[in-house]
Length: 111
Ligand SMILES: [Zn+2]
Image (cartoon, rainbow, N blue to C red):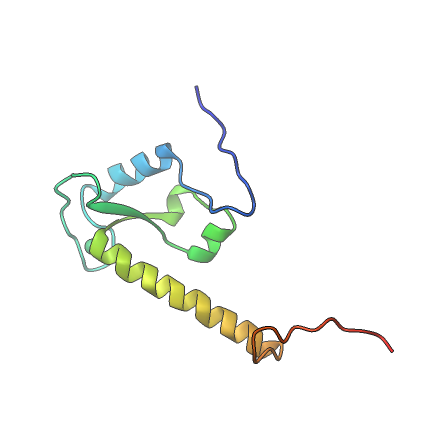
């Protein structure tokens, strides 16, 4: 009865229903963000599934150790942080490799 998920490398990998259900049982009806503890009223759309480590998520880590059940407010906050973290790490990599402007990647040619 289990369909193996189709994983396409260019697409975001989603959590399986089983992982989401396990996360819901683990959270005990509360937002899993540190210091929040918001009790869900258990209506759809009130909680969201977050990828704890966005980088691991890119590698397809969609296990129970990389999922958190968050209320919408915490999820919005976390998503903002993730976006700036990814942007920051991209900036650092660019700086390391001397890419100060986008579009400055040139093919190295031997003389
Ligand atoms: Zn929360």
